[in-house]
Length: 369
Image (cartoon, rainbow, N blue to C red; front, side, top):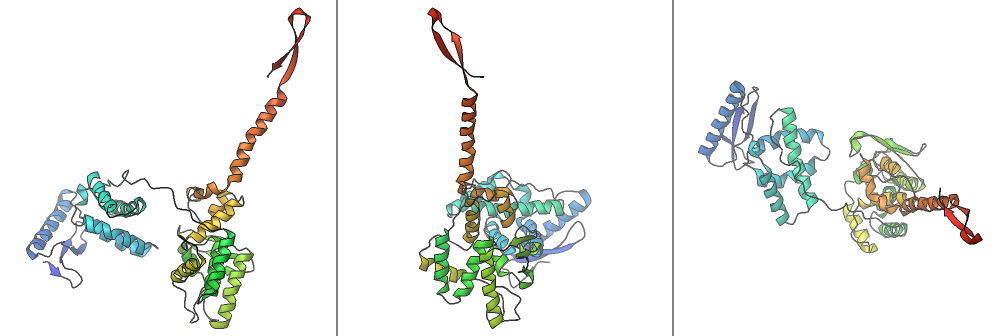
């Protein structure tokens, strides 16, 4: 029998699945009679699946809810996934995924484009839908179609915004004049000298900082790719950490966090202070993640190999690192310089042979081997 929940305008129903598992889900309607009909249909579909092996219709909620329940326990970026699912739910609620086709994906894409969303945003949202369908197909063996494949939009080249060394120092000087400016200054210096992500630094504990061997240790649970890595520390990074160490000794000696408040609690967010510092320094179109781009840009410009930068930043593939390749013109210049060497070698192998000429004269002929 359908029932009401305080957190939903719709009637909810109980259904016993073909595998005997009893689940509850929204009927998708606020009309009691309609909800009762949905419940009866769901029970009939479960019976057909159990007795006849018929693949019953799966609604958007049937697919997305168990996927999100799983993601909430296993995804570090679950909040981001929830944000991407919200517009999907507004568009696809009530749609039977068994009948999902390319026209539905195109309709969603057009709707989001009309709303002013970028190709990258739309692709990430569709990727969440695709992931949910794939997960249900593997976990429950539902054999649902996935029309998202091959229908993502072409994205423009990835954004790469970085600062020169002079701009970094200007930003740090400006940050130091603000409230909690020393913390922000150390954060910027550590980011530019290690290439760590924001959460990798704000979640950094002193037990994972090895000042003797000059390393920061990141476990899989701390990294986006889920793989452990170690970050070498140069003098700039060490100075930033020593600044945090002095602050900890003075204000919160028992705190386990590198970036801690005076109470000893972890710093949760520095975005507001960072934005103010950028504005006062006259630095526009620059966000915290661009500090990571800045680290990569400085390394590539100095001639560090792409593979080494990939390992430092923790990119899962070299493709991510290749966005910085254009910052190393010296590599390309050396490459075309090889052609000059080949031309010189060819010229040196050329010989001049003397051959008889008519009327008693001597002629020179260029012979190329």
